[in-house]
Amino acid sequence: MESVSEERANPFAFADEILSYSDRLWKTLVYFSAFSVYLVGVVIWLLLGQPSSFEWNAVIAGFGFVFAIYFPFAVWNAFRLIRPLRRWMDDYFDFAFVVKFELFPPKGATPTERILNKLGEVYPEVARLTEKGSKAIRLDSGITEKSRMRWECVIDLKYPRTLRISWIHRHVGTPDYLLVKRFDREAAVGVSDLRELEKALRRDLRWQNWTVARLFVVAPGGFTEDAIEAVKDGTINGLLDEILELVVETEHGYELPVKE
Image (tube, rainbow, N blue to C red):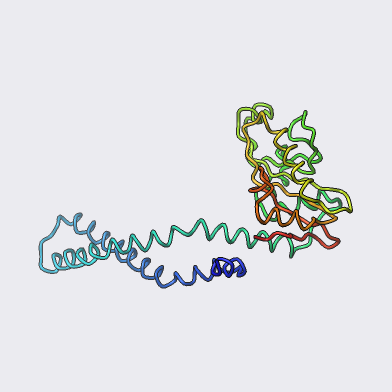
């Protein structure tokens, strides 16, 4: 538990781990580079009609024996280098997510424009859709026409680029949403508000084959302590346990009360 807490406290933990792999990476690269040169030599030997001489036999047999002996170790080292790549990418995204959200000031004249531009900084796909004016981004809208809940931003990351029939995509396709809900009030948002939001989201999506990549709850008045603890512990007991991101709107930008 202590090692896990230390890793979370160090935002550069993934970078430190990558540096610790540098020696193993260097040896693996040297092996496969030399092995490539050896294979090229074997191909040349075959193209020359497999000339038989002491020099050719010594080079091919000698180097082939060395490469064959070390090959299992090289493959194992390569596997150990590739295996944590996904975790490193996730750690980097989490670190960059916090830095971009809190360090850089938001741009835009309205709260909706500011949070949309901020999402564009974090998600390149959102920036691309915004520049194109795509219908994949809807502002002050429900997920469907009959939805009761209004969202500041509804972004479908899998909105079709060719066959753009929204009804067919929502009911036959697999929309992947980024959602933004802003509580425009001075009072802090509590656990009961988050649970009501979860119920409304399930109701609006009950007939769709959908996924929600992330749901951002923006609160100018902040969040109560019990709401923050519930998000940290994953005790909201619903859909929001995996997708919820709390965002406090300030005069100068945004703050993330939960950074894990």
